[in-house]
Length: 285
Image (cartoon, rainbow, N blue to C red; front, side, top):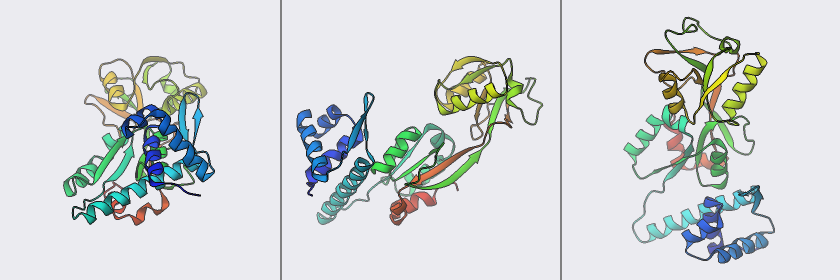
């Protein structure tokens, strides 16, 4: 079993894009040549490294492991060569998270890291599925997201938990309540995430169980746009409790919706890396 450094480096680039055309362009080789490199690497290892899922390519578990090894190998080699040349530079630690985590949880962490060591932090903005793939493949060292199912192949820790809350104007009929139920939303128009998003699915299931008739005021992607529509009077919205409440509005816990927990994930051995340990020490535990 043999795997050349060139094949590993090429596969790491392919794993970043999961697209042969874009990866070949970055490597400045032809697409057929990249196909051959990836195919021969898989053949030499005796395992499929990626599969087709509909119109997308996804890494297999073995592909994630190879990509992680390839990136680590490339990183160590680059560090050795720069150190050998007398120009060693600190390698960056990579954090993958979604919009909510960056906006409402990780601001101080990022600010501190950039102040202490400006070149030692790189950020990836992605959803929870992309975050898990990035950590598994070694593209990111640490990930933060709300997770419906906790992965058993990664180290997972709770970062923060928030109730789901209804944002309403202080003049609204529900504003005087200490908390609300989904049944209380009968007849209301709601600003909601696009169909099939996890929060939308959970909300629809809960409202259906509560026999609450409601209407979609507008679909919006991301908490900032959702709350903006609420301030415009388009409708009410249920958001995570970490989302700031606009002036003139109030947030009421929704008692029959579960709390939302943000989790931190990383490879089990990642804590042995001083860069990762430093990043984790700045998290708002």
